[in-house]
Length: 259
Image (cartoon, rainbow, N blue to C red; front, side, top):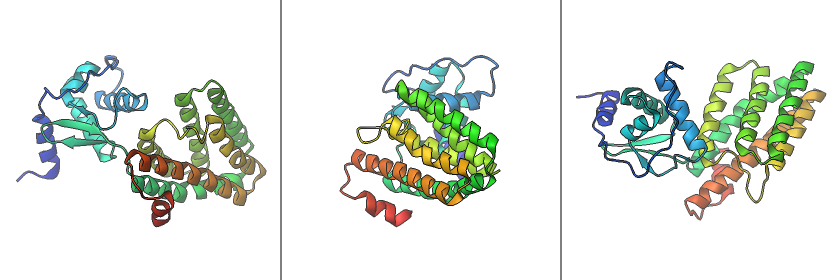
């Protein structure tokens, strides 16, 4: 009897190469620019991020390998890694699909983020490091520049960088890695939560009291401001997911059961 990993690899090898609902427009990978598997992972994440690969659409290993201009082996390995973090789902002999997080999964993600980022921001505020304060202000200026031109992708990149700085200040590389993975999962709902109810500028403004409290060395206010920001973001994403699945459940019902 095959063990689970062996069964999965066997299923991958037996995919029908004819499964290809739409052409993929991907940049061929540059020769010898790094490990093929890691490059393929980055390429899939970028394609999801900018909409070239869409949730629910069926894709094949052959289709992806052809688009990237590489063999199927590193593509299969990359997809196995992406399945581990819940970004794709394999369908035996029929390829794979991009997944959207379910409302409960999003709430769970933010419960973990709150558990990791609130102690980190308290520690950052307690340290009251001038170098960190300057770095956070510079990072927020980059966010504002991106918001001013409506560049959601760059805004999300700089937003992540700001949160990384706070986690780095807490000297917790494991927390940073976990938060990065969690953000990549929720990013499948869009580069950020900006919509008719919250603009990029609104999101940027939510970071201002966090930064101000860190600069002032006020750990209580830093924690409270970060909680407000994360809970607002999480609840908006849960609401988006509920709309996507046309559910009659409420955000409060999902949120209070998990967070």
